[in-house]
Image (cartoon, rainbow, N blue to C red):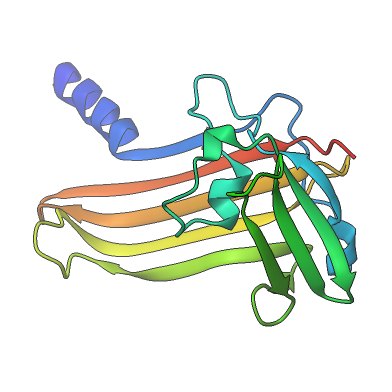
Length: 182
């Protein structure tokens, strides 16, 4: 009986878990009043939690562009050209450098002190080969931390049944800091 209770307790902790990573000295998001607050030059390679893979600001900004070699970009420059219109450049500038323009309320929205990149929820289990049936939620956001450095946060939560038998509840948060250079 004692072995059964111990195994049940271990199984409960394995199936109900929270996974979080953040750089040392992680700070909360600061307030972004307008797109102008984002102007500056940020290091492209982010500072992550120990043992976590590299995260590049360029990959967050230009997620769909498969032609970019993110490891070759040193920094990202953000300039406000007019109120709410940002020009974002990959540095160093070469003939293949990426430059984009983003308009507030068209390409991005500032909400709760940060830019919401993605906010999704739904029910898993409707596609072939999905072992989990249950609700999920995910959110990706970008902004500035309390010291003015760039900050990225990705969070998720899921609950349900794996193979319609094993109950599971999980959540996690990954936070990354992009040092502001100028």
